[in-house]
Image (cartoon, rainbow, N blue to C red):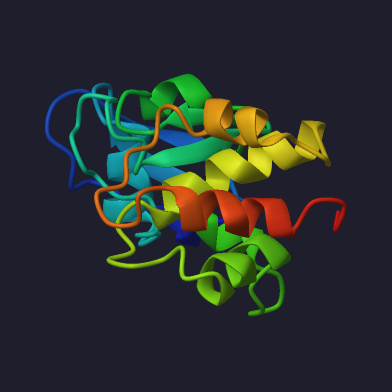
Length: 168
């Protein structure tokens, strides 16, 4: 890593430090304060705005990212606690500028309305499909329990996820 990759160096308040983060397969050196959440770092320092801050208390799931393949709430995760782990955001699921099949299915099935919850839903569903290529409707519902949507009523979201079974 080059020093030129340091994001927001010297602009921190409090006891800052520079940490390495592996985000979407790329290494970044980021200046953080001890209390910076992973969500703050992703959005404000790395300009990855797919994860949203809906509640800031871990209730809505709109900030969900993958940490070593497992879904976590970025609004409750301290950035300094994820050093050495692989972070995958909604932006990291697309390859070569093309949406992955699950992202495409959300669009095709009308599972994206206002879009605020979509990244958390897709990331949570990605984690499910990585361990269960043929989830039942109940498996899907369980995987999405921590994700709130106020627009779709969940049926279109579940249908989108069901449509990509076995496409891994």
